[in-house]
Amino acid sequence: AGKQPADLKTPYCATSPNLLSAFLRICEGEKLDTTAVATSQAFYIIRGEGKSVSEEHGEVAWSKGDLFVFPGSNSSVSHLSTKDTAIYWVSDEPLMNYLGVEPKTKKFLPTLFKSECMVSEVERIRHEPGVEHKNRIGILLGNKATEHEGKTLTHTLWSLLNVLPAKDTQRPHKHNSVALDLAVKAPASGGVYTLMGPELDADGWVKDPIRCDWKTGSVFTTPPGWWHSHHNETDEPAWVLPMQDAGLHTHLRTLNIEFSK
Image (cartoon, rainbow, N blue to C red):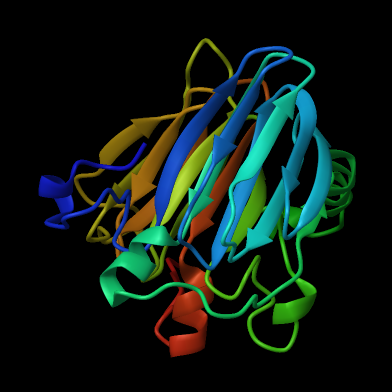
């Protein structure tokens, strides 16, 4: 789940200062309850099939590749699987812990993003004219409640389903939000990775980078303000789903996205 408190100097678990990530494993036919003192919870279905039930937010049926978000809740969420299931779970609970507060209002409605819809939209963009000049090939996951400010996943969370085509490189960019990057799909043979670091060299690439290799179902963290580029040396496309606190940064006008030239 999150980093140990000593890593971030917090008395509570956190993966980044504002976000906590975890993996849920539910065997076929079993149930797992989760709770979070958070304004936003996001659940991405890595594999499996089932439903999630909340007294406050109702029922969501899901399958592999779906993503759904729940607002603040005073009750637990029950996840029931009909197949062996793995879920990537991110919330803004560390932000609530830092502020010493609990959610008072629900800022958005429960929202489900179906895999088929997301993938078809990415594929449509992938085949548009001029796509070879785009820094990223993906879709921002927006919410009706945020359409007038940022078009983000929730008022605190931001997410993008991004494809990295075969034999392709997406040049460096940076932002002040921390990214928790889930490698949705990467070739088992390796050869897909992210290079990151605080500086660029004279040619606009990351200087003396740290390399993070993608492995399907794994997560790596991109620190705030660090340049990062994605590289695919294989003959297969790879997919990544970053989850960031960029909804909050967008509201604060502190996101500051920059792209290398």
